[in-house]
Length: 142
Image 1 (tube, rainbow, N blue to C red):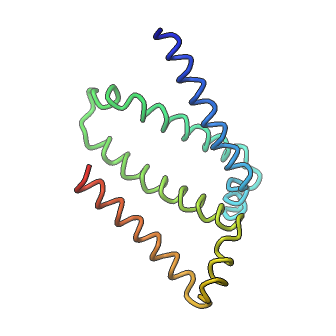
Image 2 (cartoon, rainbow, N blue to C red; image 1 turned 180 degrees about the horizontal axis):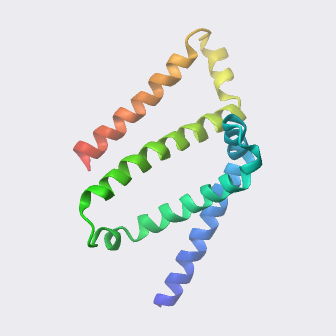
């Protein structure tokens, strides 16, 4: 029974990660990052970094208890989580904006609401609101 559960869990994990990578490939996020950073000749390394980060994050979320019970003090783990959270937030924000751009949802929103000026400020405040909600959730609710 445990073998069946392990096989099913691994299969479902592979399927969901394949879906995530398909979305990343269809949006073209990695080539866009490579173009912005002027490192287009190293695009393969960027794609490998995305895959490694996804696999490492998945393993860390599954085996979080065994990672926390080590001989290291707790502050390096906390520092790592702060840095990882910062870069993960940047990545998720860029992914959300790339998907919104791909779907042309921002121009449709501005046309329907008559919102011509200050769209960048509205997006900034939407992002700040999501950040404040996340901080409130993790500090007070969880």
